[in-house]
Length: 243
Image (tube, rainbow, N blue to C red; front, side, top):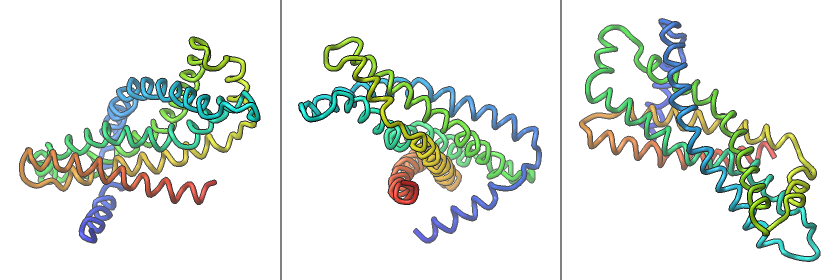
């Protein structure tokens, strides 16, 4: 563990340097924005829509009490999406998509000696390959969090619109009741830490691959598993500090 810890920070020291060729950096950055942002939209939209609907149904089922206000369902759905799902759970899901993709991509470049060729040519391969991925995902993650929250609320609205579980009026009152704007920023701040964790750890495991295709698969698995563990640990710490 100490060996991995030291190697990780030594790699990050090489990553966070001014690019030798800024034009190439911005080109790579724009490509990563598309790969990690636009290509993640379908899974974010589908998952958020269904989770919003499921949260609404479960909240209504578990709060059917004449002593509780009717708007409590919308309130619980909104708070769950803002505080936990659209930041933490969404990042755990994206760690499987984005993290494994980064680890396998860089790992394949390592075992096919493309990274070695860059080093021979005097290119800072860590900076060239990893920095655009980290900055791109940090850029798009807050947007994905906000979109996920909005789509989740639409999923809850659809439950009221197309079923008799809850009325749309009661749901909308709950969504708007006692809204705290800080909770939006809370989710965004957490997502920035999670985005850095996913990309940097995945890049580290891919960059350090030695061997063949089997080791690339192991690196991809390690990247996802360890990213999820660190995300949950950070979630505990940040929740204590920010709330």
